[in-house]
Image (cartoon, rainbow, N blue to C red; front, side, top):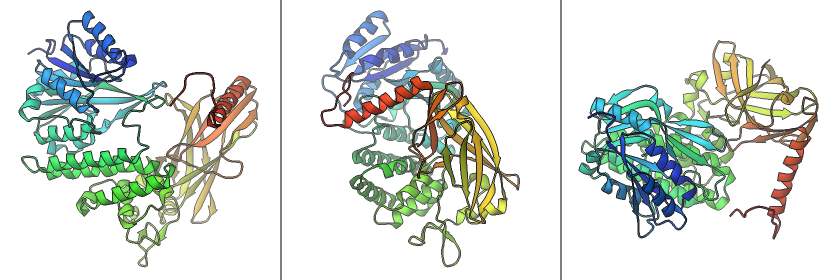
Length: 545
């Protein structure tokens, strides 16, 4: 077969997504002749989705619409309908609010045909909207083309839990009865992906970007991956992950390698992501989350914990050791990427590093042997806006003698624009001892007036006397005069409104509004938020629920 012949069915699923579904379908049609049919499954939409799909089908004979009579409540049943309706040798999935990358389907098909693969998988990028900033998903898997003869030979495959950046041989899915869970089932990809791996497919990996996952954080209705405020989301994630692990364990070969890798992935990704958000949740959520997590972690054995990277492993051991939520702000720092271990630094009676005096059973002896470039070093940051050059004070904390032994030397500072990662300000300064053997400080002068109005993230690179380096972020420090808006005169804008703030991960970032117009715009937004919070408050524009 030729990779130019129509061999791929693209299954597009949608529900009440008339503004986006046409772009999704058109991105599938734009893949060229390799896509022979696009099956658009409408999950009983109540908006203009049916009309949009009817127009697309009338314009291109490759589009076939399947309309469900009753809404399924999830993503699984519509995708299963698409699999059942597919008539071509290969199949892909596409969500209505995303798009296939140009040439993605052709790249996957070429790899599948070249290697006789049951599955071909490529890079997915998460595109933040409206900024357009792109972040690759699991890029380690897709650095170069590869053939994986059996999934257990590449355990990291379990880290890519998406179903949409892959091409499947249609008969493989049918022969192994690989289906999605139906009904109101969140994280159905976990279960589907485990069923695929349990079928022992031959998998081709390609470095091409094949799928663009649109992330709309300001949407009226958040996607499942973003809507994590309720405890049911975490409960559903645990349930889906537990089922995926059970599937891998029950595979024909009893694949414990993949099951263990899946548990390590849970600790390194899901556990860290939700732990990072815990301090902003209410006490009731925190208690429920802690109990659910603790109960699930009791199913893990010591080898499961040992297989996970250190941050997730430490978080898991703290949760298992404490009956109630505790140390949430410190756990949030450990969960960040890169991880930070904030003071205090306790030791057991035998001098072993431990989490705290209250939890000495959570040992941290790995910190004594881990390479300095990978240590969870804690750096605090204070930004004091000034006329002319502002002052950024960085404070580096000792970590069980490792920092002093390496000899803090110089810190390189870079402010990068949030939307596109463009570098703005780069400066360096030398560390000096503040409290001998405990903290070192460096004062970096930065000219904020030279930057455009936008959000700028802080990255630091620590250089040590022994020649090693560590790239990390800096934790925003709150205190008198810190993390407040300040109008700074000077620069080409005449006046600059500077707002240092802590990101969700606790990192220091700064929002700039140049010129009087920018200052007025920020003031208006602030007033609008204030009005919305008032009883009966209303501002011009559409309601947001």
